[in-house]
Length: 88
Image 1 (cartoon, rainbow, N blue to C red):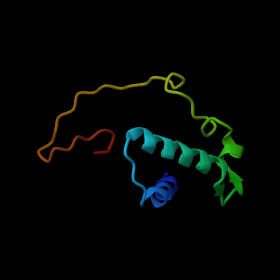
Image 2 (image 1 turned 180 degrees about the horizontal axis):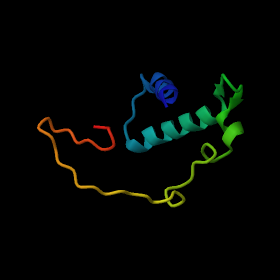
Image 3 (image 1 turned 45 degrees about the horizontal axis):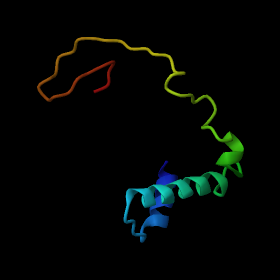
């Protein structure tokens, strides 16, 4: 994502947009060019060639993912941190 962000900001840095529709159109064109033209150095292929029109393999929609949740009652410490499985 950092590469895409830098590539986008570098291209649109000096552009002026007068509506949100203009910005969305420019970003859509950027995304198209990123997928079709920019070659990934390690694999020497474009993103469109690797993944087609979808995303990376194994990534589905939110409806495809299993729903799993664990609920626990936790107290907030004096420093406003909450510990869950050794993570704060």
